[in-house]
Length: 251
Image 1: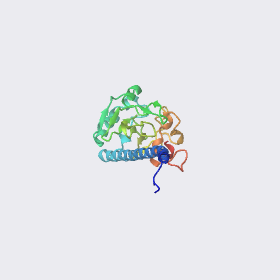
Image 2 (image 1 turned 90 degrees about the horizontal axis):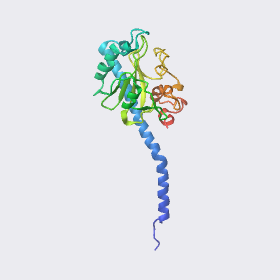
Image 3 (image 1 turned 135 degrees about the vertical axis):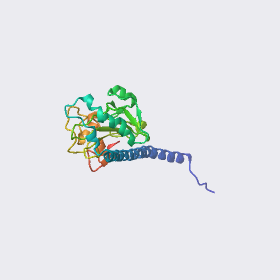
Image 4 (image 1 turned 180 degrees about the horizontal axis):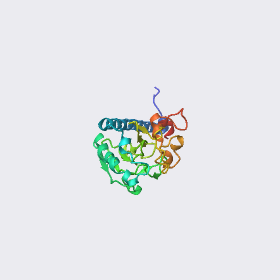
């Protein structure tokens, strides 16, 4: 009677094929799951910030941009980060998010900021945080917020940077670290979205509300990666609009 079964060599060959297939497909699946989670977190963050902006207007009858604006374009820089800007960032903003806590002291020293939370370029190089004026704040979901300058009169602002998954990594521009702007219309837009009230200040190139694919450059410095939130939310590859952001641009 002839025995039915597999030889050892056949089993080894089959196992080997399964291993090769797994080695090819598992990293892709992990990447898809991770980017899907980040995309969901980004959309929620974008929605939450817009809700905050609307609630603020309903509560105070003025937009966040108007409330926090400087006296004029020549106002003292230190003074521009006190008064209403400080009141909003440190007292009002926390009331709109669940369990928001301070993480680290208020500092504009980049070395001190990096001790709290290190940010990297898309290529993985440790770099500067665009926002550096408020200290980090963390909500109950782990998202980390830090604000930048008060806006000039009649211009959008302030800018807020959000690490949408906190310490979960990779803590990189365009991956889980995104920049948003409160607007004079009472909404929030992602950095990189064109708007007639975006600031015209060019003294600090990373403060400027840059638009265009050159400001979502995966191979550039952090100054050229400030506009990725716009493309990530629209899910468009900035260099090929026929492809999407999360699958084709982030690799």
